[in-house]
Length: 222
Image 1: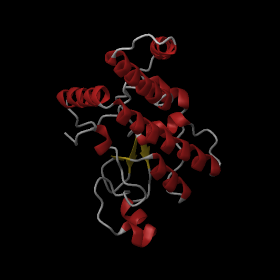
Image 2 (image 1 turned 120 degrees about the vertical axis):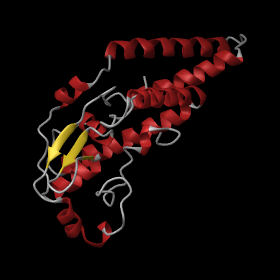
Image 3 (image 1 turned 45 degrees about the vertical axis):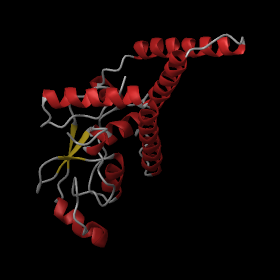
Image 4 (image 1 turned 180 degrees about the horizontal axis):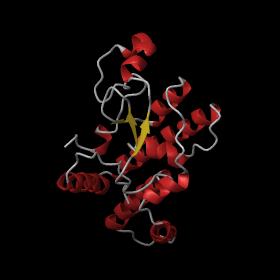
């Protein structure tokens, strides 16, 4: 179960199918890379929870952080079209007084997810059983085939990725819009010199490069 980011409104059905196929190919050929992606997203979400709770927002959870970093929050300002913002960008805007904390709850975000905890539990049990069998055969000095070793490596990396993605909503199709009254141009002026560089993805790249688009694809944007 690969937990992809929230698709953009402009993404076609073919684009979504191709994206899933590419990630599936990567998961089969190099499962350790998918595990590393999941670990990085988990670490980012953990930092976000700490930062937001330091601001006094105890209701900000790992689910909120994952949702934000996967493109779940769209920022709508008076002077530009809506664009996705990361958890770190949400933190900056709240810290600077530009944005009020979203009232969306963990349960409301999870309602958007198609994750099946029972299916995850069954898959994890099957994977653990397979690994245990191979280990037991090795202890008993029984032969273990290369195919079995490859399968163990695959399910181990997949299991680790599922652990890191445990709080990340699965297959979310729609985002949540956060509205601000201040113009983005004014936010950039107040940010000073660090916001003067040209941005690549969104005007808030100076806070954190928005990897929403590039992280959708393992082999490029399209």
